[in-house]
Image (cartoon, rainbow, N blue to C red; front, side, top):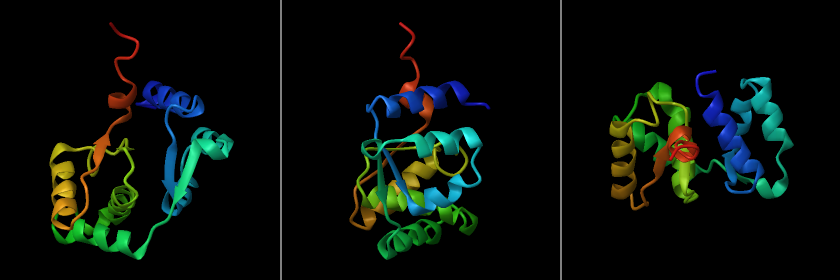
Amino acid sequence: MEFEEESTLLFEKVKLGQIICVYSNLTESELSNAPLKVQNFFTSLKVEQKELISVTPEALSLAQSYIDEKVVGQTSLDDCIHIAVATLSKVDILISWNFKHIVNVYRIRGYNSVNLRSGYSTLEIRSPKEIVGNENEG
């Protein structure tokens, strides 16, 4: 796995209570296609290590706005829903391994432009490497 080291460090931070895993019912359905190691990690989390947030009609509307504004195409609707739910829930950082549709400076600017024009706050979007990287250096 390309990001195995960063993923492992990120998961350790969650286990240590340094990061709370905020997820939606969409994330839950996507987990069924995830590697068994990821599924097992997620199910092993204690209640205080994770927080479930819901996909609301407002989130679906905001997600569609990203597509209408051509930040990404219609095939990226699920990615847009993750971003909208995170925005509306005011999560500190959305962490993703999706560099094509999410962790991409032009896409991030697009999502945040739509957020601001729609009256929402901007969303920090980062890769796991940006969250756990360089901790063992220096």
